[in-house]
Length: 220
Image (tube, rainbow, N blue to C red; front, side, top):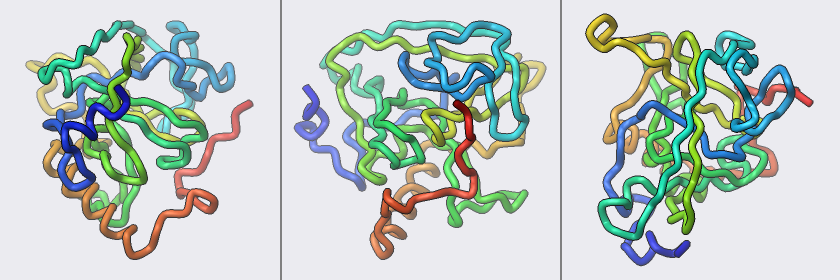
């Protein structure tokens, strides 16, 4: 079933299925997270453990929830299929899967926000076609663990991939939420990714020398 999306006619310029917005987040079981205990599988962490964040150093987990996804081959389930990120595509040391609505912090000179920072949060599904990233049918149930912090955070996954972990909020009391991270709508995110793909067509990406100004946290 790994060629399911290829059979559906997907391509790097036009995703095989509609995109989704950045959601509540959640990392697939087996994904390693930088913590005060070293690189730990997300499912091995508990409330109170400290997790290394991009902006605020070590922050305690205030909540963890789990969900099992059962994805069929029916068309309506296609949007739920996870995204495969090949090794080194986003500074990740091993191939890994992300849920399609998982926010990923990307760094690009093409990003222009009011702070002038070259960072934006995009849904993982918008990255399809970038550095070999693609959606795949899992051919099995997958477990998703959702970490919660007191504020919106970005955490380190598998050495260097930056995953967005929004906090739960009362939409009536806080309809806007934090402005620390620029969270792009799906269509805008896709245009950014297409521009990133085009920019690397002229200067091909080399995983052997790839690095980012974000750096890799040194955690045993």
